[in-house]
Length: 283
Ligand SMILES: [Zn+2]
Image 1 (tube, rainbow, N blue to C red):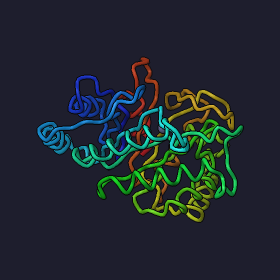
Image 2: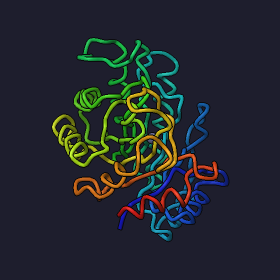
Image 3: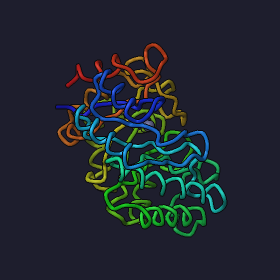
Image 4: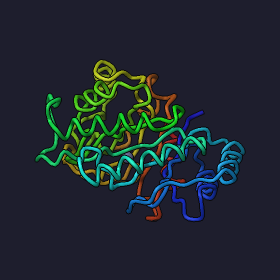
């Protein structure tokens, strides 16, 4: 069976999010651990955690992920970087308590023009980034993953080379990758033909290792190819087209992975059953 689900609101609590996910036909959940628009740290208590785990089992939701705050910038050497680190430490501790696999993180920005750093090892912001990720991993439970998401805008993680460099320098099996179709498209990776997808996966395997690929975000894009913008669209309503989603969902090297939508929703209320049903129809 396909592992497919959605980012869902936690209004009303984490358990409510599980129920909502199940109602739209999903079996993998992504949620914020706390409000993503401020420095609000994740908190759990033992009763809440055991209820959440029970509900998860009952609804057959094996995979749950947190999506980290949008404020995070791990390449910042000052207050923002420090708060980013503390917030992710709190989040991964909560993840362990709740049986959540890990946190999917937009790493931040080098704030240097196009923001891609090539052969980076002497750049102070890059050194800060690596140090912060290592410290987070050192201070959090072993049963959680730190999952870096690729970027489609001009932020850290636009290219496989950049992600490969971060993976190599952090050198920790708990650091994984999340690929977002909208962001790949914005960053200039064209996966709209089966042979192009296979070539991309071969490049990923060579540079990073396919075992590092933990999860996909399946989103269509509102912008043109290689636009450097990363606005999500409903599946089939954007510029990517349906074929890419069909190829990804059925690819022998990918089909066992979890897939999560973060689409605006056909009624504008966020990821919905219709988006999931379109994707299910391809499998
Ligand atoms: Zn995403």
